[in-house]
Image 1: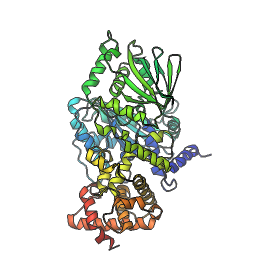
Image 2: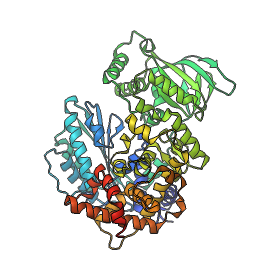
Image 3: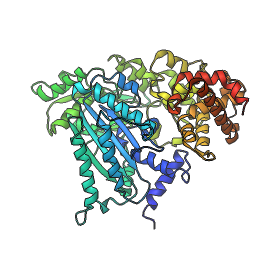
Image 4: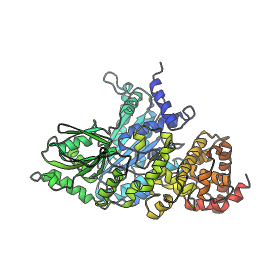
Length: 587
């Protein structure tokens, strides 16, 4: 039996869930799968995972580069531009090898990259460095500069991922000293880099480790140990009830921690998880935990609100299903971080808890999230998922056998088919590209996380007067185009074709719809009534040819163009609309 048979079976099923062709995209499937497993505790969505993957040529041995600042995944320069302070910065550098061979050259490349990207004086040439990688290196440089005054702690994770047997390198009887010594060289390189307070972490992940990671499930059903029997308040006949309770700080810390001591990030409502309103508040909470031992913690703190689908009390332990912590983010993070830092095993102080048992599929949970956080000055942009239009879209998708993840990874965590899941960011990209009056695929491609930040943009994308079928069809159209593009092969495929497939999904979708309707700018009623079954390889092939004509014309007018940068410029979206008829006539 093949040594990789079990893992390959998992990968084949995973490819089917993603609507990927396993035979043609084995390496890509392996990369996405490995990245998801290694960063499972970060609760990333599909867009965040794809954004972290480099792919293509000239990657200099980096297939994945993920950056987290105080547990927030950095996806764009916009997040860095507003950055003022940082406490912890994590940099995850991955190289994926879809082979059983454990290639020591991977370690050599890691060292070369480490000596470059952690040296702020390094000059890079696009002739030798992948454009996506250069962009992320520029982000890192900006992060290093902007956070220097706050003296953050850096931790750099190097991961060599393959299908090999880790024990061939790391074993007591006959360790591979050549490989291990090369790893030590990377560590030495980091010690001598421009950054202070930097930790190095390396690991080789083989087929056994990937299998073990895949079997680890996120636990949304947990037991919360309470100090005393809670006050139970029944309110309605349909199972809703609430509890007022308190828990020991250490017991609450254990509730927040997984078996390896990592914070269960996914327990926090995703819409408010990354809201760090005031580092001063966090410092005060941490100071209270560390120093105010003569005063009980709950006297000084408003406590935490938890909602769950179901709950049962056994003695002084409350067993909860489908848990979400919807208020008390800073309190919870501070308790976890401080106790973790102090490695404290006992503390007789308590935390106040408000626990509400409600069906997450009705409006009660959304109202609780919105109400409890509006009292804490959380920006409305972070509470979008609680809007009635978002619930209406979710219900319409469900009725049509699709799953709208207005709450990050909600349906993914419920093991729904990933190819049927549409995130709020992806839907915003689709609407921006092919639905709204000023179609802007470049903006959609540039940074999906900012598309709903401003009220004006959000209200245009999620208009309550819009037919709900438009939302579903826009997502189905782009998904259909994406599937066709993945299977598309070009004669003598070169870097241009590779870049078109990677960076121009939304542009091709936008052009395809104009070809379908015969006009450069169409109304959204066309999207509502479009026959998606008619979108086929022939039409997408024509759309790509039109795109090439438009790019050629753009280059004649502007001079030499960079395909990666152009894909993110609003000016190019306007150019598509203005020159569509001229270019489509040439194809």
